[in-house]
Image (tube, rainbow, N blue to C red; front, side, top):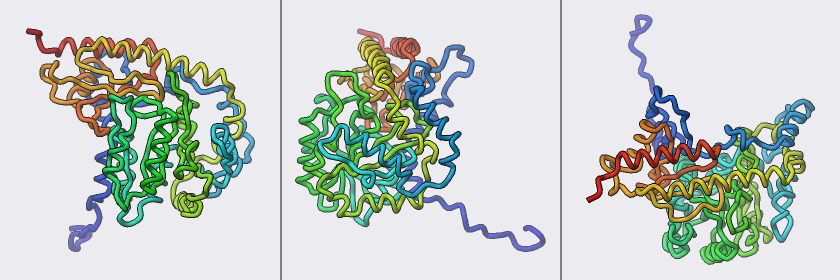
Length: 422
């Protein structure tokens, strides 16, 4: 009892079921837990192959022009204020012009909503689509933030498969099989996280035709736009916006290597105006009005970031990624218990299959990653967190010598835990 009276009956503290459901799809927590497995006495550097943040390595430092634009905007004193819910007008116009470069029509500032990174764009779109009874179709393997945000706002999600033996293309028959009259959208990620594939023009055209047949919109997550280094060029899904309405999501975190700046966007790439008529962008702006804001001075710097970053920066970044992808692919081929079904062509990731029959005392992908962290100080993301049990997601956006060292450690681990050959 307190103050001589009866004990207070506190009414708070009950778990939020929606938040608990969302937490089950949290890859950040999964990777963070692996840090607790590290041996603090190991003198070797930790090799972070579990999440895509190349900005910590000098070889992936952002363009000087981007840094200068942010500094100049901050010092100008012109962007210390609140911005409108849709974002700073100059930033919206800059994104519209940037996207229009690769499209057969013009995107306008009114088609664009600025967000606090692409993860925030996911939050916004899942909330916008969460009408009672609606469902969305998500790729498997995929980026689990979609599941988390859908679960948190009560939006049902269903999965379609990506096919490893076909370069991780979308299983379009599977899309049609899981869709019903309540399906409102499908999500694609191109270039792809976690698989490292890049979709061809022809495959994107088939996706658009499938969406049109089903009467649904396509959410195209293009945060890795132009992060390609294989034989296929990047083709934006918005090229097919006249076939089916496309919501394009992107940002500067990956191409400019600045995930901490938290600047992304949502854009209606829909020349027929279907999204406008259905008030999708209007609803996104409405959600933004009650959500977090991206930093105003980063928004203010965006036109100069886009305009002043030269081709040499992007070419150099892709050359380093190409080198790293080659190292990753060839090193993985040397590890008997790991199979890489598709050489990465874009983004910063590759999905590989773990053969547990070759290993002694390893129960599943989570156990594998926990023990690799403990014994070799290498962090790898378990595929279970992406909907693919006994697979692994590996990022190669790491300083190449450290990447090579890390994969050599994984090779040593697998040899040490390998079952004796008969």
